[in-house]
Image (tube, rainbow, N blue to C red; front, side, top):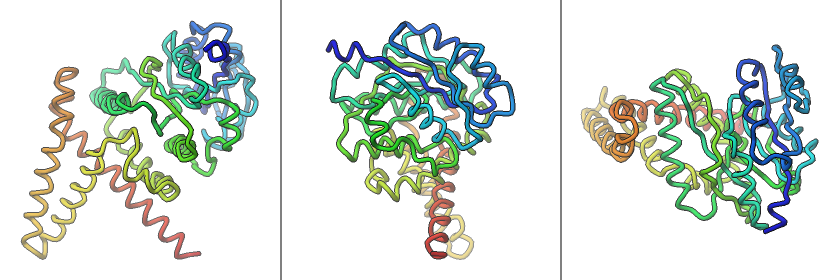
Length: 331
């Protein structure tokens, strides 16, 4: 236990044009109760055109710079330069709670634990952002039931530095920040490493505030998930983060769309579409019931949000599959 308590950490924050949000992030990191256990705060400026780097320097952070190579490359550079035994990752639009680093470091007292995942909160009042928060909390509820997890995303993540570097860090071929962190944690899980969920390690985040922004984000997650699932096909069936009902909803919406198109030429297609949509609505009821005690407005609108989520992810998956098929044919 004493070895775990002695572990030191480096906090790594990738940032691009983050001048509006980075000051609050860095101020929150300066207030951490972990104190001297945080050896350094590293901000990797990934091709910013604003004053991101200067803000980080004024705050006393170590500043590294890249010419816009993406969040995976930025995090990997920070990891290579870090001095701490533990790498803690968060994002420039996050404000970690004062005890965030301390909570993230606690599970590493177990020498077998190589990775830790924390949680989101938000202060936003927009309906979409409130739905997103409840969506995350629904996934956290699922993860909390598991002793070990296989899914860590980098808004609130921790890894042992030696293990992180041994496995090559995040795959830099992912051009945008959305699923490269998932792929890395799947890789570690496949190798038998133990990772845990830490619900007390909280960062406050700026979620997508509008439905179009949310839909765009989910589309690209679906698109790049295809690449992840080609490498880790078992995770298309089950992982510790994704509720099985989400996969069912994508399937039901796909059947409904197929039925609507078929209905133009084949009357039973309308029956298929209606039955699929009815089943979809029934599948949303557990989420709506859980949301009711937290936010009744979001609970009432949840079926529409869940429909948008399934549609965006489904179209993203379809586009990703088609893109990979075309690439295979070209080869």
